Image 1 (spheres, helix red, strand yellow):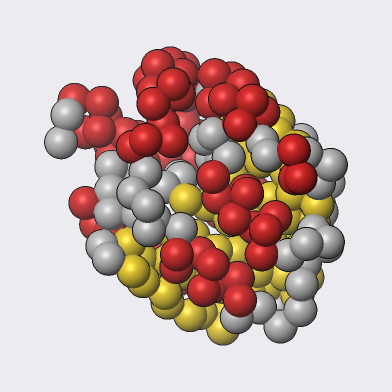
Image 2 (cartoon, one colour):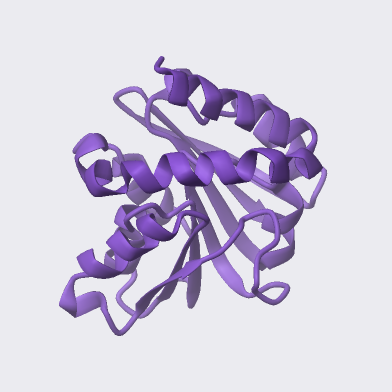
Length: 203
C-alpha cells in the first residue's frame, strides 16, 4: 500500500472504533481524495459494482429514495439509479472535488433523478428515516448515522472492491455486529472477483 492508502486504513480503523476522532483525520483524507478525483473513475475496476447490482436485485421492493455515501465521482449512485428507474438518488461525499466530478459526469438521462451533495457521513444533513436504501462503496461506515437516516424496513449495502486489501475496509463480522446492535438483520453476502459486499435490512 502507498502512504495514502495506509493512512486511509488507519483512519478507517480509528474512526470505526472511536467515531469522535474522525474530525482529526477528516481534513487530511478530504485533501487526499480531492487530489484523486480527476482519475478516480479510472482507478475502479470494471466489475467493481457487479455485487452491488446483485444485492440491489435482492431487495423486496424498489426503493423510492436512495443515498450513496462516499459517492466519489458517482459510479455507485448511477448503478442504483439505473437499477431502479423511479428512484431518487442522492450521492454524498466529504471531498468537494469528487462531488464536482460526479456532477460533471452525470448522464443526461439520470440528471433529473440523481443529485450530489458535499456532506460529512458522520453528521449528515438529512432527516431521520429519509432513505429506503443506503449504499457505501469503499467508505468508512458511521453506524449511528447509517441507522438514523435509513427508513424502517430499508436496507444498507456496504462493499469493499478489493476485499480485505481495500485501503478503507471493515471486516464483515464487525459490520454485522455494529449493524445488528442498531436494529439491522437479515444479512446477506455478495461477491465478485476480490470484492465483498454485505446487505442488511433495518427492522
